[in-house]
Length: 129
Image 1: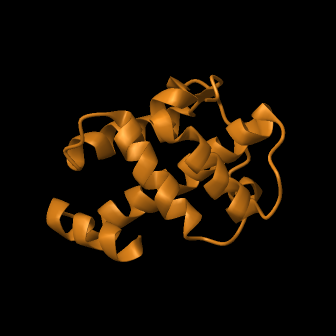
Image 2: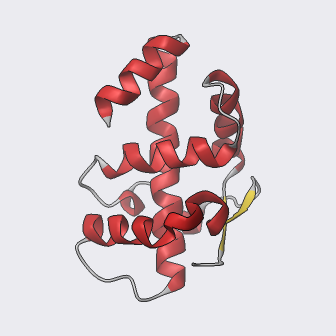
């Protein structure tokens, strides 16, 4: 299991906290897992729009294992499949994971803003995934 860390921006962290409450999820990691799934539905590389290096890194800091749990290798395999090449470097894995979280949080947040209530968002999430 990867034991690296990722740090969100203040904006993304605020959205994670808000989405956790709105979606009635017990952990921020649950929100991030949904976000990763939503982001993986988009074929483009999320690092093109969500440049991790420009991230303000003043949000929350998370152990990757907290997000991926015992499925770390599954998440890595999903990212490799999406990227279309190997991920040999832990820093690349961290930046890809964070970029997918960032894009997915934006998608999920926009969906919530558009739909406006819990039931419609949940239905929308299931139809998107």
